[in-house]
Image (cartoon, rainbow, N blue to C red; front, top):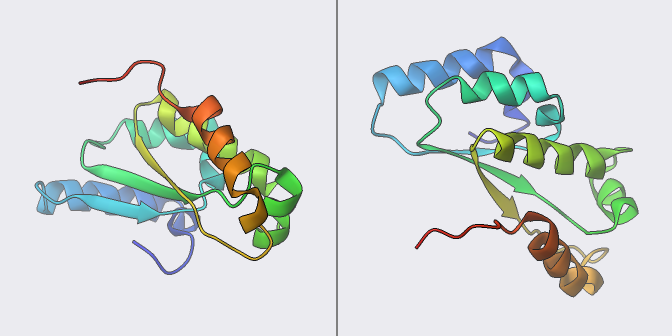
Length: 128
């Protein structure tokens, strides 16, 4: 799914996931989202009650520094909502892909962003 924030369609988002699970049971689904909607835990929990084994949610993180991230997306508190959304999805074992999108405003902090992701989001237990 792409072309805007898919979770903004509300209940229809969850209905669509159910339809995909029902009619395309072997299909891998990659959803591009800003992740902010999932800052509300009840939405992450609601998604977890569906079969999410073939779902990956790709969420962009533009910077480790909230002001740069918020500036790029032009939304106040977007950084904190995005991080909380990632944590809430992870809490329910929903696969998340953190997407790095390079911008003139953020490329100078690429190393800090990499360290931030590694220190904050790297799984404590690796499966071999």
